[in-house]
Amino acid sequence: MADAFLSIQHVKKSFGDVTVVQDFNLDAAPGEFVSFLGPSGCGKTTVLRMVAGFEEPTAGKILIGGKDVTRLKPNQRNIGMVFQAYALFPNLTVAQNIAFGLRVAGVNRADQDKRVAEMLNIIKLPQMGDRYPFQLSGGQQQRIALARALAPSPKLLLLDEPLSALDAKVRVSLRDEIRSIQKRLGITTIFVTHDQEEALSISDRIAVMYQGVAEQVATPFEIYNRPSTKFVANFVGTLNVLEGVVADKDQGTVKVGEGQLAMKGKFNGHKAGDAVTLALRPEAIALGDYPGHDQKLSGKIADVHFLGSVIRVKVAVGKDIVSMDTFNKSTTPPPQVGEPAAITFAARDVLVLH
Amino acid sequence: MKKGGHWWAWLTFFLGMGYFIIPLVATFEFSMRMKRGEYSFEAYRVVFASSQFQQTFTYSVVAAIFTIILGVLIVVPTAYWVRLRMPYLRPIIEFITLLPLVIPAIVIVFGYIRMYGTNSWLPFLGTTTGTNILLVIGYAVLALPYMYRAVDTGLRTIDVKTLTEAAQIMGAGWATIIGRVILPNVLIAVLSGAFLTFAIVLGEFTMASLLNRPAFGPYMQNLGANRAYEPAALAIIAFLLTWGCMTAIQFLARYAPKSANRPN
Image (cartoon, rainbow over all chains, first blue to last red; front, side, top):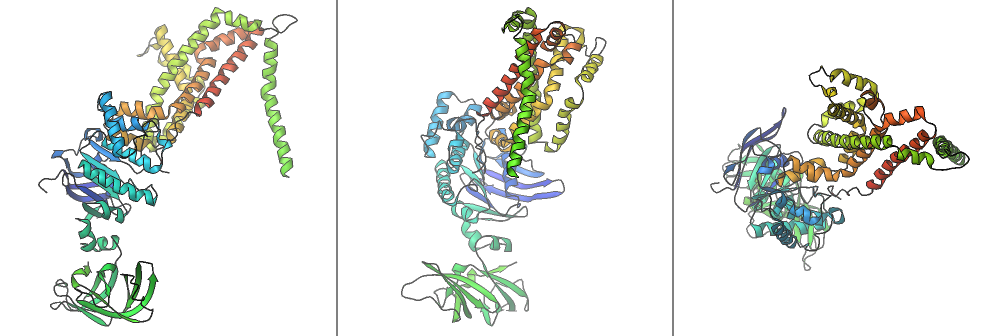
């Protein structure tokens, strides 16, 4: 990316013989919100800590605003960071916590007070300046931590699983608030999370990581709908898996259970008789004919769960079970278990997993 | 069976209390008998009026203050660094800080006399100031087990690594981190260590005596060898001072900052 604000180039990190991050690359545009998503131990926090300067890369370069910061200390990088454990200074009041970075930078007292008031307004806690961290709830503490990170106007904001320690309701509201503040300030942000819903809902782009490698870096839409690897497909969202055998690679036909699909161009790398794994998102499947759906498989209703506005239906197709959600319509009763059923979907929504 | 256990517990408690309090009461009672036929604080008046008491007490208080400063300067950064970057060194550091408890003070001071005599490359004992400095260093060594444990316990109550990183990322250097973030959060623990150090220095005899310094410990010993009622008064005064220090530790512990750096 020519206009990248943050550029992580071929970064590698090893601890002794163990390589935690291998050849990680990412370019983030100014004002972009990028999430690192992956399971525990995938290396996402290590990459973030290398950007912050807490860990030194074994190889590779990190550039912020075009400047190589790879060997700079954390206090020389002008970065704001929010930690999972809040990390507010227990001996300082909220106002003193927010002013900490400004005080270290030698900003005069009047400007410090002005900026603290401004930040308290941004996080919607204007009356909390005199409180101590232990007098605040978890959500309030994390907002203060965000204000403290943003107060010195950093070039880059790093968020290390900032919502993990909060309860579900606070997590959702704070997530939206973080995104809204980030957009308003236009600050380039890296957000580490293992929660796919969080990553999908607030990111401009997501880097899905596995075993120290960025498996795919793309928009939430692409990550969800066009996963490039089996890991990404399995890790993000719910996936139905169908086992098939290629019948004719030129025609793109594949046998699934008793049925056959024709998806030209999908199996170019295969030959007839190859076993293939096909994957489909639940929402890409419809019960019966549906406009735009060019593929059809027959099966039997295996299970039905009435969830109010949604009905979750499981259909047995050969040896595989396909799960799908349909909207509840008051005029149409839900299908009965054991009924024959046909599922349809579009060939473009079928993923061939590698 | 439970009731019997209860009874034994109270008996043990009262025996322990008796063992602790009876000599104290006896010493106090004896210290009040300086004037024939009546109880009075005459022995205390004599002790407080003595210029030697004032000089040696002042000397030991000043020495205690310097010992505390030296102890804090050595122990806080060491305990902090070990917790932050070198946790694998903790058992070794703990072992080193325990050594003054197993090596008698007399061995340490003879070592000092041999190492830092007038003919050595660092002749501390060549001047009075040098000897005073050596005495403070010796005191800091004697107080090390208490100071280190107090500070280390204080550091255990805060998330040292995350607080350090939070301060670092906001531009703080090491001096700011230790001075504005770490030290204020372990201040109560440091003060506990400081009061223990104060109590140790006030009563220390061996080092001050062998280095021939006019400290409170040798004064108490000298008085005990030559007078009758004043040593008892002095013992009560020393006890009250130590007890005052312990009370101050308990009192300050209430004001320890509540840790807010861990998720709820």
